[in-house]
Length: 281
Length: 266
View 1 (cartoon, rainbow over the protein chains, first blue to last red):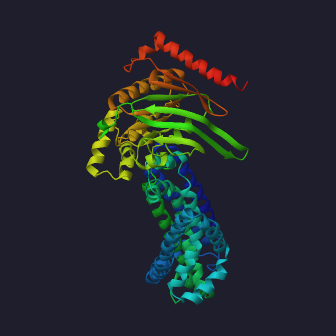
View 2: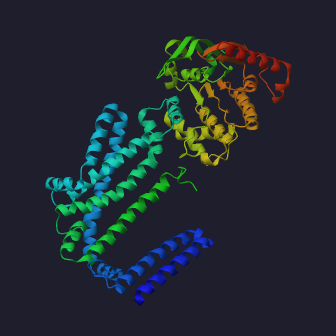
View 3: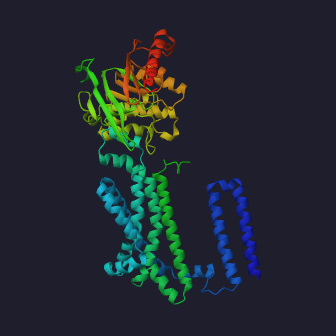
């Protein structure tokens, strides 16, 4: 019971500290914002730890963070191998291929009204396919290894990328396009110097959405057949063995990888679309 | 090359020009039987209420709209040929600068598209920045500049590739009177220095009279020319000329023309 009260006390203390920080001049600075986030995260972990121990929750229901941390520390080689298999080989390669295909298809669609009528509905149709139905089929087609996972990811990210890029290519203003015409610019010049730059905020929206979809797709696809390595494979087998601490360890890795990929894209976005009102400071 | 052309040669010529837009509410006659000749070195203003077709006529010259009847030549070519030959620079109502490019980058853009050499590009950007008094602002981004400065940058961009014709569509319409006066003076100076042919659309009678050698008064529904006034004012024009008798007389005639155009529909 003491542990539960300690959890409550720590929660209140962390909250009070963050409130005070947020109001002070320090909270405005970059270091201040980061420390507020760190204090919040630390508080959550501590409260989790104390509550689970204080209330004697079964480790199958929810293991304390210290146990998950210990599991991560002792199985680093396995986690690394799973990470390479699922994130680097499956998710990232599928992400790059799917997003690239989405942008290229959007440019084709933009160029030809015929494709606009044909390709958009097909993209829509593919996006509506349930992943639990598509994944086993793609595993049959492309084998157990990462290629089939990449294929699932391609299907998942293609449509959001396509729709965002198509919208982005229409985002330039009429006057800006008229200017290009007055200079006698050709289609590709106008695409390269005006319409693609103007589409960048949309393209980055698509990339951010796709980055999380890619990870989900790669992990879930492994449930339908994979070699004996991979985050999805590990999660599905460890659940069967009630090794929930390992499941949580994989979840932690997946969350970190997803956040890192998202953060990286957001960082590049700030560099590329610095001119957009949403990025100006 | 310029010297071989006679000074009074016809730069823009419209004969019985008609333009009908097909809209959801049926056809709209935007231009009706427009006849006009613009000579080399003219400063021609188009004035009239909204819907009189003054912007549409300018867009026809630029081949951004296509007439449905009559004949229009620009430098002896069709407007489309003239556009591909980069015969004109166009200044729109808003500056329309690309926000991801610096001011210098924006001015360089048409030069990149037209394939000028790198060294030539830099030299031209510096020259036109100086011409519109924006030297030192080349590295700024458009959103860091005031509206007046942005519009000056867009004029510099239209001048950078040295087209003989400058088409300006209410370039100062969104600016306050003080900035507008200053830019009017600068445009006159530019015109005197470069000898370009300017077609200038405006809502403002004083602006039209102050700037132009020829004032085209237009009236709406259908858009047509109701009066063409050749200005007797000298080419050299200080701002004070706006208080002179002659100036006021021309302004009066423009106002009468505008009123007559409106009388038709009442």
